[in-house]
Length: 364
Image (cartoon, rainbow, N blue to C red; front, top):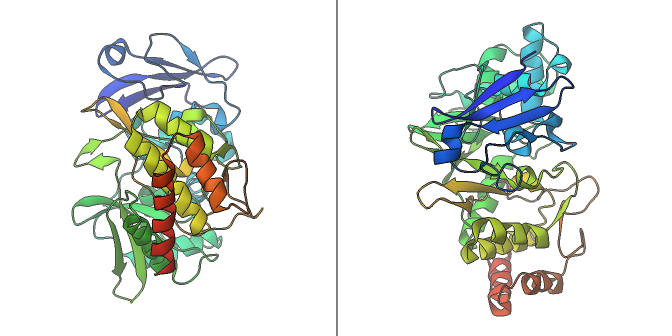
C-alpha cells in the first residue's frame, strides 16, 4: 500500500500526493512548479503552496485531475485481470496504488512515481490478434499474453476495448469491438467523426485501416502528445469533479465552463456546435468525460481539446447524459437556440450551425 506518490510533467516534478492517517488524499505543488508551472486544475487546485485536501465523493477519493489518469470500464477490467495474474486483489488497492500502476503509461501530461506500469513495443501491432485477446477478456476466457494486452491498454478510458499504439511513428489510439457493438462499428465511428469534421468540428487525424484478414479498425491520433512531449489535458468531469457515470451537467453549464476557462469565443461556439451535432445524431453518451481541455503552454492558457467519441449512442435510460436547457430527451431546435441565447451566442450564428449540421447529416 503506497502512501505517497510524486507527480511529474515532462520530467519536472509537479507535486506530491499523500494519504493521511484517516486515508484522505492530500496534494501539494513543489515550490519550483508554483514559480514556473501552471494550475493543473484552476478550479480545484489553484497554483499555490498550500496543502489541498480531496473532498469529492467520486474518483476513488482522488482529485479529479489525477483520476483522469485512471482506467475505467474496459481498462479497469484489464487491470483486474492483470493483477489477478500476479495474485493481487484489485479491491485491496488504494487510490495511490492505482496511480502507481498507471505510472508513465497514462493519457495526458502527468506521470506518477513509484511507477509500476508495464512497457511494451507499441509499433507493428497485430490488430486481429489484439481484437481476439480483447474478446477473450470480455468473455472471461483465457488471454494468451495478459502482460502485453495490459501494457497496450491498461490505462485506457471508456467502455470499448482500445490500445495505445505507434502508427507510422506517431501516437494513435486504435479501437476494438465488443460483443455489444455492430460488426461495422469501425466504419460507423469513422463515418460520424468525418461528418463532425465536415460540420466544422475540430477533430484529430483519423484513419480507417483494413488488416490482412480483412477486418477494419478505427484509429484516432492522440492530441495529448507532440513528438516526445506530453500535453496536459483535463476532462470537464475532472475540472468540476462531477460524476461522469450519471447525468450531472447541462450544456448551458458546459458552455459557460468553456467561456470561463478558455476566455475564447471560438471555443465557446465550437462547444455549441458539438452540442448541436450530438443532438442531431442522437449521441446520448455525451457525458462529462467526453469533453476535455488542453493547456497551451506557449500562450499560457487552456483551450478546448479536439473532439472525440462522437457517434450515435444510447443510454439505458434513453436520455442525453448532458441535458439541453434542462431536457434530456425530446430536444427541439428551439431548445438549442435558447442555449445560444443564454450563452451570448449570436442567434444567426447558432441558426447557421444548426442548418449546416442538419444538411451535412441528412445528405450523407
